[in-house]
Length: 308
Image 1 (cartoon, one colour):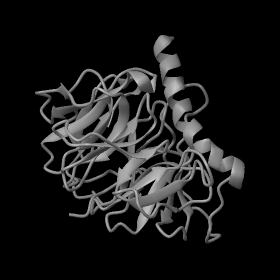
Image 2 (cartoon, rainbow, N blue to C red):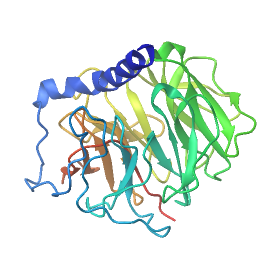
Image 3 (cartoon, rainbow, N blue to C red):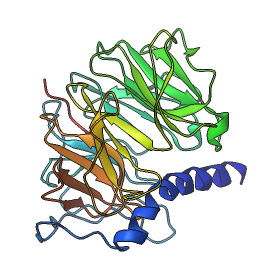
Image 4 (tube, helix red, strand yellow):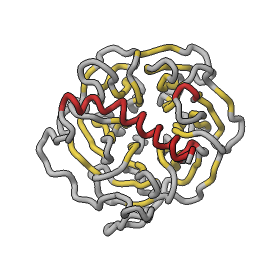
């Protein structure tokens, strides 16, 4: 029961920061280009049975199929992949959430509900191995040798950023100020993360030096492929709860979506952003705000393959 309560609190916190945008712009997202969302199987749990969704178009994945978007389907159905247009929907694992491609797209790292450890697998879901027994929210170093993640409980003030080698050795704490949801810069020199006790978007060097508050209050940062921009969720003021982008020095802050969204991730060419909506579903939008459309009828925490 304690673990269930922690998980509910974690999901509520995620939804809380993106919900206010919906109060301004309406509860139901609408496509800016007025196109019909791609018709793919709905990824929803069948009643209360906790069974795997019925996937009528399940296609075996090959090791060469890396050019997609991975995401999870809380609570029981694991990590999935689809092509950027919403097709070729395939299940990779039967457990896990918050997955991320390695820089060369050959592997994925993912966490578990209740922050019960980091796992690494091949990009097709094979050869799963657990590398830590606690933590969540993994993100790869550019050389694929290390993973940054967070350790703690259901309250953001009790979470801290850690780094571990991809083989599970040398796990060590990076921050002593609270925080979660770290993302390693493609340039390798900085890690961005959510502040815990002090909300906001923070930066720190991989050696633990030069910890800096980049932007007050806002949440869920994600680096662009070139490492020169950051997508994030606005928290407070006009456009609160929506997806925004800014330069890596916090200049040129620009609103992208007009409805609620979270967990933004960039396309490999930096021209689009995939994101989740609170009740489930993966959407894609151009960074200028046009072409906003639904790709998946359910799903959370997307990550787009990398440009290699």
